[in-house]
Length: 341
Image (tube, rainbow, N blue to C red):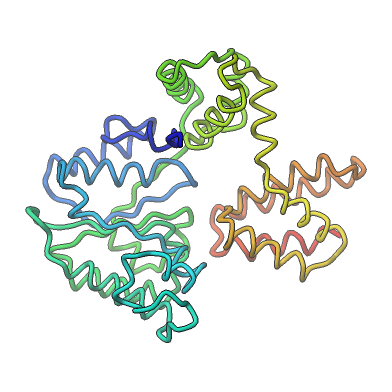
């Protein structure tokens, strides 16, 4: 099986991160100082937050970094719930079963028990360990208050990094306990150089127009750009990667559920629309931005009149702006489809 290039070419040092110079400088200074506070990484999806946390751990702990670094995804806990817990082997001793129907504790109680135990474990050959919680905006209010108490209890031997796309959804006591570090998408010039290096390493034939097409589709998102390049390379199968191949490869991967969502929204079927939104967010792991981009594409190709398309694209753009500071993507998406018909 071919390696996923987003992992193969992920930076493993802070200096190797693309863009985000201010974040890199801040984290590098913390490493040199030997003092690390709790941190809050915030910024859009795939802007380098997790990569930075992993690089930070490697530079702090060296080759044994995995012994002092624990990763948890809050959306797995609180969006997928017990179905996720039985799939993660780390949690077997906490739940004692592989049948989600036989788990009688609440998800929040299990979450508190797991985080409390990991935070309470003594660090190995280090002053403190790091617990990284991705998609922290998915934590319920009760979970956030419990996390605040755990952070206070183990502050001498444990540092938390909370990663989020919506810092406004974190409670004030959590935000005030962490140094906030912002991450953003990278410039096209940096991303272009990165893709060219990958193309050389993988011995790809890549036309300049194909590269421009990838940059256009990625819009500064490194992971999306690298994944698009890999999909196009697979489709080209040794031949030159052209602009047409890039668009064919990405169009094939579009989630067709979004077409059903558009039909439900235009028909005024709000109940079906809500179910489809839940399916895309919870089961397929799509972000609100992903869904809006898919809706825009589906709308343009829907055959609706120019007036209808223009009116609804304005509504989509307004929702896109609201997602930046929204506490719930689901609520904003549901509001959007309620005004489609």
